Amino acid sequence: MRIAYVADPRTGNGFYRGTGPMAALAQCRGHDVREVPINEGDPPLAAVRGVDVLYVHRYSEPGAVGLARAAKAHGAAVAWDNDDDMGSVPRNTPGYRRQGGMMWERRLAGMRKLFELADLVTAPSAGLVERLREYGAPHAEVVENHVPDEFVQRSRPPRDGVTIGWIAGLEHAIDTERIPVRDALQRLLDERPEVRVVSFGLRLGLRGERYRHVSVVPLLELTREAAAFDVGIAPLSDIAMNRARSNIKLKEYAAAGACWLASPVGPYTGLGEKQGGRLVPDDGWHEALGRLLDKPRERAKLTKRAGKWVAGETLSKHARTWERRFEEAIARARAGAGAAVPAGRA
Image 1 (spheres, rainbow, N blue to C red):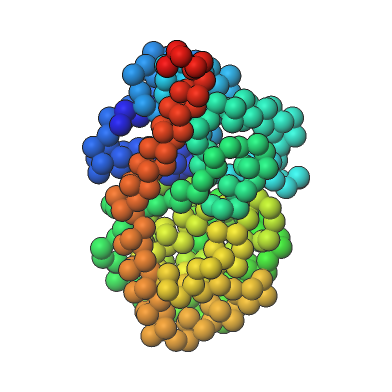
Image 2 (cartoon, rainbow, N blue to C red):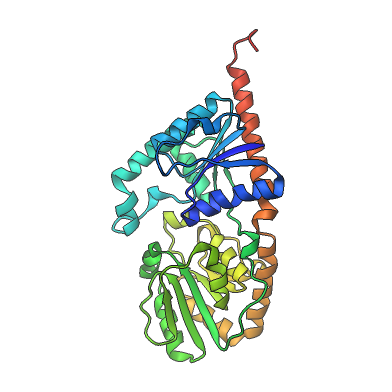
């Protein structure tokens, strides 16, 4: 299969939905994969000549639409992907100021132009697939996010005590406003001298020397840095944007060698002890964390299960999923092209 793809390699989203899976298709499945640059200006239309499928992550600007039209004109299938529901970003948040309002309306208009051309639309969660269908996406399917094989840590540094970690983008500030997880963490720091808390990204403002904040961790170093975690947490308030998220954070914790606790919202619904963690109601964070602190054998058992789970959640194990989706898109595109040929002209 000859695949051209568009994704922003500078972002974590672009890696998980673009660079990572496309590299797996080349390395694990033997496909001819080429990246099409788009950030420096209009993409070169010649890049889609001779390809079987054009895959675009997130981009919906005129350049991406033009590239998709050129791909269709050359007989290729078009696949488009998104991994966040920016139409549901709450007002009065940094995300809304950057991408809401008129910015979102323009983006949605571009998305709908691409939907008219797309033979496949993908997203990492059922919640987001449903939203994309509401926006007009045809042939929308789930392809989950998976961790690169090299993210899975084979050893962990020795340590004393227990470290609770949270990988939290700045948009999770809204979750700390709605869920009392910050108070639960502060209580544990005050009550238990063996506890440390680390947050990557979002500053929690906790008191004491056993809280550490790291503003930026490069994605390719994420699970190595998170190998210091014994328990990873993933609080999510029950809002539309969160219901459309992926479950990659829990896979990152598992790859780092930690068990996890998460809110029973969106992508985490249905996951649990088999995957190395537990779901926690909004008012249950202090109790759930305290239980794992008091019962190290339970914590060790969950950590072992997390390791077994993530061993089957790597890009190499799921490259075939992307391959099947693209094969379906190509077949759909070719069937549509055949149907468009007048009788007697095939």
